[in-house]
Structures are given as structure tokens and as C-alpha cells.
Length: 405
Image: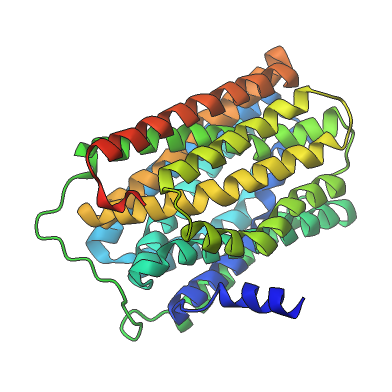
């Protein structure tokens, strides 16, 4: 047991102090985002919106994310990642507190669009900061540490959120989310001064290649958009499936979602370190991750046994543990060819587009055809994603890309 513990601790060695601070800031911020997994429940239960209306609100969520990610990438290349991160976090906290006071369909659409526009300016800036503060050989593990912080916060957030809803109301979630963003901003200002930080990987490209002309990157973005559409069902249609079909309470839903974060916290870093030393390529690992995530939906149609929910959650968890870190690392490596803000903005936009179509399509499919057909369609989309990633792998091989591994 002691050897196992020491091996686990060793997987974290070699990462810079700035990466650790970024992880802590992310943890504080993410622990408060307990509103998001319960958003579809809040909108249907407290505000009495229809599934179709919730779908459009989620589309506004995604559209704001697209605009914010694009703007964040532009501003990162223009004024630097630090200023973008500070202003985005602080403003997001204030806006989240105000969101609870919006109760009509039109105002909530506008409110969620504005929040996501501001909030997702943070993401490309954070990726550029992470790339700058990581040694080249540590980038995948640095990304994994950030994901570890996200999922540690996410494992606690829904569970605590379920308790808050049960004992108080949904309103408390908005206050916690807003305050956590403000606290994360204060910590960022205190510990991550760019004038004192050690920049470990400066990329100076005199003739940058435009991300918009990078064919391989566009294939990658298309596959990540599909992956995002599938994955995001766990934050909109899946909680409704748990409640309406399997009759789970908000607390049980929070604990089941928390199981995902717990397994990622315990297993992801050792898994990633081991996979980095295998012969598998990044596209090959992304293929495997996408396949498992697609299967997590298909198994739900096999039986009405409640235990299948845990099996589906475990399949999705392993899939995302593999797909997300290596897709992040692939995007950061590819970004060295051009303007990093532009590349990382497009990478985050791929998931923002998934927010526009994923939630809306999933909720409309459930409304019109039921959950079983919806899960079958998500499984088919997973297979299409696998096919695109396989094409990407073959394309890179034909071009003799050195960073394929």
C-alpha cells in the first residue's frame, strides 16, 4: 500500500509551482459551479420551463460560450492571458449572483448568454498560461492536474449542491458559485503575478500559421465538437433521465455525478502517466476515449436495472479520463505552429458549439422520441466521432507529423 501511495505521489513530481497555483484557482472556481449540473432541473422544476424552452436556454449558453471563447483568444494574443483571466473571473462571479433574479424565458436566455460570454473568455487564456508555465515534456500531466482540480471540485460540488437544494433552495447555489469566482480572482491576483512567474516554455513564431488554414486541426475540431455533444448530455438530459425514469432524488443525482469526479481524482493522473510511456499515439488514445463514452449511452438501453447507471457512468468516466487530457495536449502542441490564443480559442469553441447544439438537440430528442432513442443516437454519434479521429490519425501519419506521439 505504501509503494502504491508513493507511486501515486510521484506522478505529480516535476510540475511547476505556477501550474499548482492554476490548479488551486481552478479547484476553488469549479467547486462553486454546482449550479450547472442542476440547471436543467432548476429551469423545469422551479421556473416551470418546458423541455423545449430549456433546450433554447442551453443553446444561448453555448452561443455565449462560442463568442466568449473567440473573444478570449483574441484578447489573450492582444493584452495577455493574465488580464483576461482576472477580468473574466471577477465579472463572472458578479453575474452568477445576479442570475437567480431572472425568471422569464427571454431574460434567462440573455442572462445565461452574457455569463457564458464573460466566463469562457477565461478558458483560452488559462490554456495559454498553462502552456507557458509547463515544460514541454510535462504538458499532458499539467493539463491532467488542472482536470484533477476540476473534477475534485466537481465531485464535491454536486453532492454539496444536492444538500443545499434539499435544505435551502436553488438560490443558494447561485450565491456559492458567484462567491467562489470572486475568491478565485483574489487568489489569482495574489499568487500568479506574471512579472514574477517562471515562464518555462516561451514560443516565439515569426511566421505563424493560421489555425483557420490547418486542415488537421479542423478534423480534430470536428471530432471534438461531436465528442462534446455526446459528453454534455450528462449535464442536461442525463439528470432528467435519472429523476424521471429511475426516480432518483437531487441528492442521489449529485452523489452519482460526484462518483465521476471521485474516480477521476483517484485514477486519472496515474493512468495518464502510464499511457504517456506506452506506444499509443494521442489520436489513438482519443479514439479509445470516444468509443468508451459512446458505449456509456448504449448500455443504458440494455436494461432497466438501476445498477446500469453506475456502469454507464464508469464507462463515460474512463472515456473522458483518456480523451480530454490527450486532446488538450494535442491542441497545445499544435498551437506552437501559430498564434496560441487563436488555436486554443478554436479548441474551446469546439466545445462551445457542442453546448449550442448538444443540450438543445438532446432535450428535443427526449421530448419527441424518449430517452431510449436519444441514447441510441448518442451512441451512433460516438461512432462517427471515432471515425473522424481515425481519419485524423491516418492523415497525420501520411504527413509524417513528428508530434503524432
